[in-house]
Image 1 (cartoon, rainbow, N blue to C red):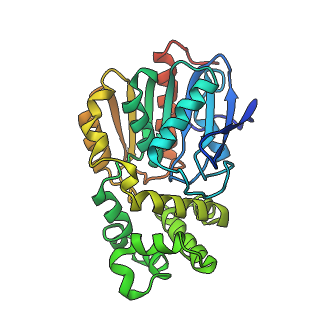
Image 2: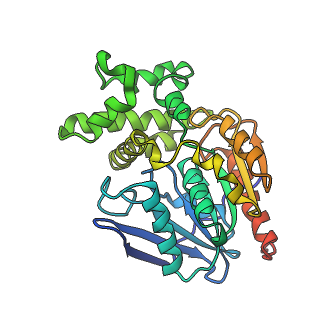
Length: 321
């Protein structure tokens, strides 16, 4: 069973100015001469965590992490201005150019898989490979499943907290109701909605309860950015055309990849990964039998670390001692 690599600190951090008012936090770890890999975090709005650096052998990889607009250490916090999927794809290109990288591996889960796929379909010539987890294709039925009807039938107890800030007459459109509060001027209502939204995601992300995951999602700073930015994206169809990712899957031809998905993922149902794997024959597909959605699930950690080792070997970097 593969586990995360030991804790590691960045050898460089950067502040990268993009469209006003945004400034991105970017960090580099590992081997500056290694295979460049970009960690693409979820949400949108979740930001990076320290353990995200540890999926990669630091002797083999030049590990790059960045907080997307409004998330993590990027500023301004929770900002929705100039914050769309095309903006984020452009940011990734700006990071690549700023760091002098020709081609890189993309590693992303949940919304990170979405953004990685959109980037790869936009700039396939810049992608060495893809390692993706918890596939999210941002289609209307996926949003409806998690925020209106579907996952609530699996977690009726946690659902009560998610709907608590919303009066009964508005509950026919919970995304819209939360979005109005998260983008409104009432600070008390905004934080109540943010906490309910984010804790719903944290509580449903793992097969078994995981206090660390719930605490991360429930922290006020993370909750506000995650809830505001997610609701902003989902209320605008994630700034994607209908079924955009699968329709453009032919652009992934020739790009090697690994798709990892928990059998019991209640946030992003496994149907997403199944359809992506069928549309992308260059990717291997692994179903993790005892896992939900989170990257912290032991079975998913094992599969992802194994995938990074395999990818490095495919790219001519043998395993380190």
